[in-house]
Length: 401
Image 1 (cartoon, rainbow, N blue to C red):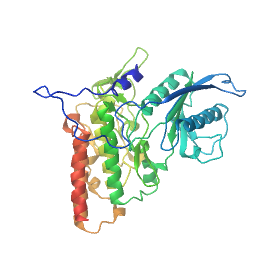
Image 2: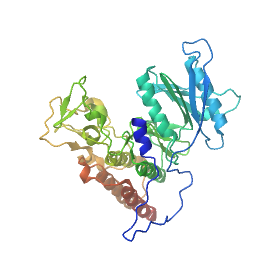
Image 3: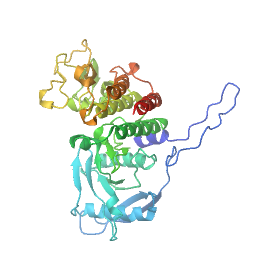
Image 4: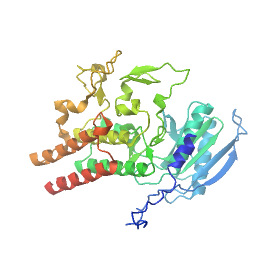
């Protein structure tokens, strides 16, 4: 059902007629490297060799061309990588987390093509997690935009799903940990790229729902790519946090029943991502505001709101925070990190030459605050509007420079 819901958002939208019954004429052509409709691939399969417990299992593959590599080469890299994973071979690159496991791709040929990719797969070998990863793979496979991490191939069998993904230099979170050695123009370009990627998703009626510095990848030139679509939903789809089953222990938070205990990990995203009945674009607009604020402020912001009325909200020192009281009082309003005076600071590493430059950068923080309203109805209502405002501020800043 989830996969069908996602695909429904990828159907060609019907053009609306005006009052005279005339269909609109397209104003400009589609941008290069962007596809608003499902990308077609080539299906195939192979049988796992070897002596492991999965030996003899048929693996289904779906591959497509990526840059200059034909789908046949993508297929061979994915094929070899799946075999290496199921046979538990060693990998030069190996990371794990709540997202599953990511390893370096392998190739049957002595070339460097495989080094351009990684393989993401579910580390828990069960049908439920494999199905969730398959939904993510089928959706990401159909996306094509310069600011979206492509998935040129995926494979699956009963309890495993494998996504072949382009390998990037680091996440934005890693860049923050390393001191964020990015110039102001590069940071502004990165914010714009992420906004354009979100606009593309929203045109497909898709809410990312989990945008953070961990899910923004940077290449060697610091261009940004939105990744990790495991939480993505169609706009208006039911919020899984509000889906309470007989097996759940409901939690009353802010006067709303949800099926999980709120924790500090929920504070990087909008409160309505946790509490609303349905998925909405406002969640992504909020997350984009956090990214914009972080890049101008110079520190990665992980906790953007609290229900603790006296919390000092030391955003970068978790041990000093007292977020999310055990006894929540919905009569007291939530507090935003933007109310703290020190959050009006500009990253000192930018070394702005004149006070006028700082004055113009502060306008970006004001724009971010409009996206960070805790009440969804008080935020900017579309990413397209947010990007228009951002581009106007960028032009003003460039004139000063």
